[in-house]
Length: 77
Length: 351
Image (cartoon, rainbow over all chains, first blue to last red; front, top):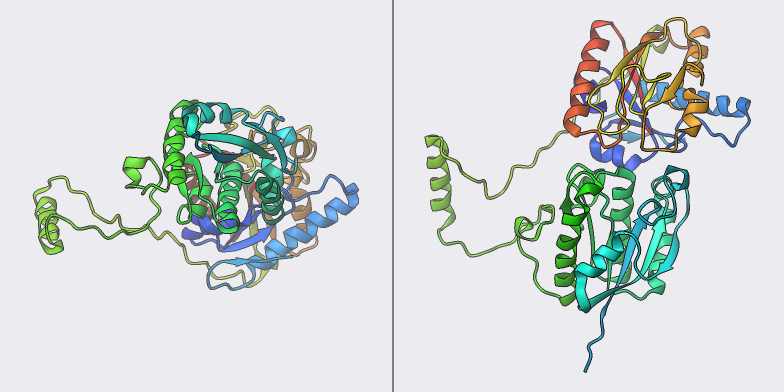
């Protein structure tokens, strides 16, 4: 889906956990996330800390969308 | 004099290793003596020449989330069995499992210098990741094809163990690795090329000797210049849907996506939303769907003026064994919609 959205001309960031798969499939902007069942969360944290973590990851995603890239780039946190 | 049997170690995930389902997807590697689960069928297919001396089991989630560590831990256990060959799977269309099977087999080849073999469906992400380095037997897309997969695996395993030469992918049943092998042909290349061209011009069937590789990379789009002016849309393959899944998006092999109005919604709550995705432990997403589709945080950023607005709709499908063809179609339709609506950029989350 990421590639088709990119192909249509919209910048898109893939927020996912298994980075090798995202790279092989061909996403360009990639932000690694926490875990498969909770990519933008962490049930081991308090609700407050979890939301702060989610905010951090979403901001990373938005920053990736603001960053020019030549090809594939993994925006490590 | 009885010849020593070949020693095989089998890698399985937590489900085929009979430990549990998604609730046990986070278990680290553990070892068992002998064969279990599909290993029993594989043992029968191998016959007297080889035995499965041990099985190593690891949770699919644990492996996919910690590929390097899990590979190292698995290899520690594999080594103890002193194998002549490592076999992993079959993984069918399970993406995390296929990735793990590939990683384990590559490690066995590199670290133990022994042959390795795995098996999975052609669209499994593990294929594109590892086909150049491994023999991957082609299977159907589900465990319904187990019966057909095991004998093909056993036959290729025995050839590898005996050191016999491995033939063409179509003959041996493995996925083409893209390796070119020089052979003496009956006619010179120029004559074969002309034959092929004549057939093509006449509209007769012909088979390319080398399938043209499909390079499907899409160039990245220019970045957003001013995020405070941007409309951002949320799209997910994590299967978040309104409670009761009104559009009946399938838990795996999705044939559709949903488009859901979130105008005025600040937060995806467990009462109003759930996950339809059958390929990961749903507990955490069901308790707080924002963990997969981060609407709560995006709304905060919208309120703070960091983005102009969150698009009024989010799009969702289930990326569990969903075919490449369907996924591409969903992506294209969603993209059209977003463009027509004037969306500037997309956050696409996956599980």
